[in-house]
Length: 623
Image 1 (tube, helix red, strand yellow):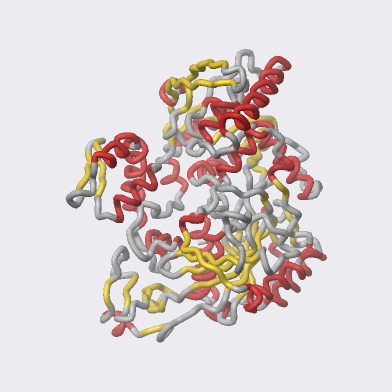
Image 2: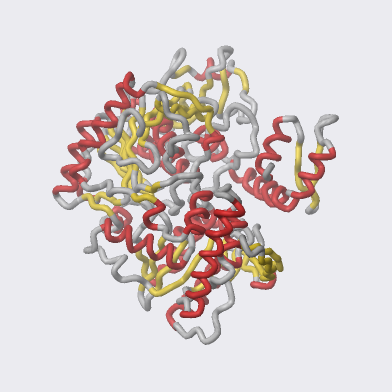
């Protein structure tokens, strides 16, 4: 049982855990804390303390209502499916980079002997100063690391050896290093280490799954990657500073080629984030494969709006245990059919480049095994998604008067000034539209979506389309005959975004979604001049949180509500910008959206990559 499972189990049994003066305190019903549970608590005490401190610090700022009348805590609970009961999986979202920064702990790995790249050295010093200025806790290498030992047993000859190194402690959020080209001797060592790992995996593990930490220890002893010194790679991101790749940020290079360049860079450095620097510019690269570029003069903006959010909320898939699983018949779903049509119609735009299989780009088995654990068993990766929101489902009146709202019942876990329910259990929300309070029913949300790794422009209706539901919790319906244990059919990383857009449209722009609505995401942007009347854009100045986080869902929720408050309900199309990631589009009609996207691509006003992002930032001033 890991720490998260342990906390969930105890919370559901009525156990209350909190931190007081640095000590873990527990209040429990009689009989719940058994001797076995006490052992588990002792083993995971450090992780539990970190988690509870983060929760305490986050909750205080998340309960303040925003301009549209809802608090971040309420928005987070709604779009995350945390409405049925309290759970340790729920953390109130943080969207202010300064608050994010104050929760981060980062260390810089000591420079290699004789390192002389002055451009990188100067940037490294500036980066440390700016991180400190924003409140990030910078620990020395000695403070951030601890000594740990691990043993390797070679199969067949039964040779044993013990290794002792200083590793970055699991509670450190990131370790920042410079790129270190491997020497010939080290390449030989890596070759030996990898072959030994393959033998170990085959004869000792017999292909059983083990933890990321264990894989890294078994396979990385001959390497000089920063990842080698990380105690738990699932908790600590590796950031590598290197020279800026001018080809990668060249706006004339096709995005498909940039995908290959970016992936090779991440694999070469074996890191989650790569920062490229030159005398004049800064680039940042992660698995979103953005080609964003910043002037060195913009380093403070780069640190606050791009780097800090990526460290605070790393890319991670939504695990299947967050859903109540079921099945549906895609052949009887008109929205699944519409989704197949949407993908095919968009094939000619080139906005959805072909994905790739991890086994084809990651040559080393140890690296494949690590990535396999981190991405929750996904065998492929693709860029973008297509989805189709079904009409919101209401039971009773979609909107009620204030006097009726006052007579409703409170809902556990929510502020009674924001969420209430009637005697039938239907929930109503108090929010602001056009400066006036309105009281709307929270509908049941359903949408169909392309599965992770699928070919978005040639979807197989029988196996590529999943159905996602949002009520008081999350639902996942797989096509009939498909079982996740046998087939790689995982939800998209962007599920929170899809649900947030759909729910926000239902609450703030119901005309946009009353007959269902197509939603697409790709890794590019429209030019500001592309938009027509009743087409709007928001989000260009948001912090660049990665996909797979429900903070990104919150920003999309707020973008829809902001557009509705500015322009009313007459929205034909909304473009929701995600800096360093791409754009989400939702429209009232499939054919309309397809025609507009095709027109933009044909006229060079919509392209993959960051070419048009600057025009959006210059023209838009988001609230």
